[in-house]
Length: 202
Image 1 (cartoon, rainbow, N blue to C red):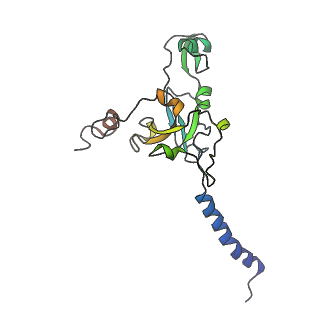
Image 2: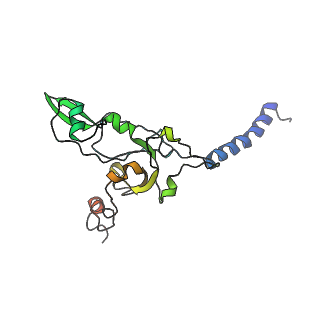
Image 3: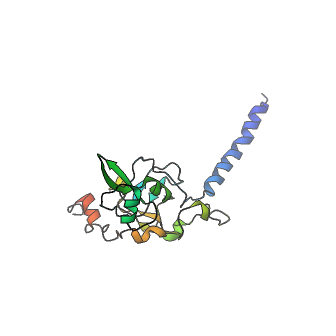
């Protein structure tokens, strides 16, 4: 029984598609530093890690700064930012029952939010292709000083499943990130004990 023309076409096309899929996997490029959205309508109080963030290759969107919200009452956004000693629009004034309170601006958080990935060393944070060209251009990221592999937090929604996992964090933000290395020490660190309790390692 002769093979139909369409079946021949299908047989020839299948290995081409498989090869194409393998090449795409082999050449997958990172997007550390690309802008991303946490999918939240409320601004966080400080650092924020969102998973899954569908706009990121590794599904991780990170806001890496640690900001101190001014405790003063306010009448407008300028009051909050002046109290914080910044000329940027980092904070906003939210008025409830005629009383204004400062909070982190969601717009600012989104400006400083970037795709990330888990890592072991700083080099893991490089976006490389076969031609060794970064896939996120300088004008496409809010990060100016590159990325380091660091413990950003005890990872909120990940804790305790992935306690103190290292992520690629923009170096611009590292001076505002508390070093959690001691907090993550098994059986000793505060973050570890908060998750597992003093008797977990017994």
